[in-house]
Length: 273
Image (cartoon, one colour):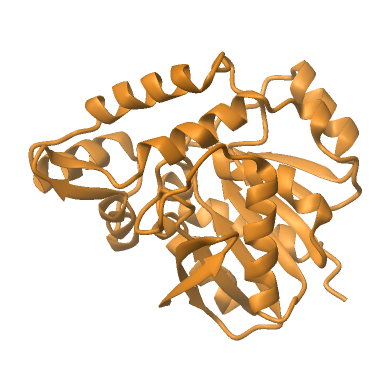
């Protein structure tokens, strides 16, 4: 993987890019997580003929913060410029959690998108925030709960929460944090992330553009039938829902082989012509 800095959507972004295939996969990580979340899956896709772009979204990892309100249109602008920078090849969008909802809401006006992979995302928040201030307060509490005195304490906590651990997972969880005088804290810009969370609060499955585009929804637990899921099934006529046994919300780290196998099998069903 090569670390490349790009200006997209008017913000300076850090990406990890690799592969030489004719198809492109772009990865948008979950809330507070860096590009490294998808190292394992991107490597598997590259081995099967994909180029890949792993993204630190604005205000995440080492990318520059976002200023002002956030809307899914801003994500669409970023994705469009990243795809154009690679010559507008046929593309697969992969997102986790907030990133999954982001690509779902941003893809419909992009050219050459051939499929979506939603990793434990794409459904509304169970308890939406009433305003930006509520999202910011919740994020402040989360930051406090995820501050550690040193790297060893953070690694112990991360390992206890995950079912699977290897060098790629460790690279990801290390990149999700940074050292400060207060200790080891999440590597995010809180106002940027709060703006994204507040944007997510306004998301409703009925807003998703009707489409026959192939979409894979991967979950770490059985998805209970709900009005939102039923709406997605109606809006996304080629939606496939797959459960990954023995995985939690961080399923790309908990069950990387099962996730990669599911995504690769899905990619074979996509029309790349």
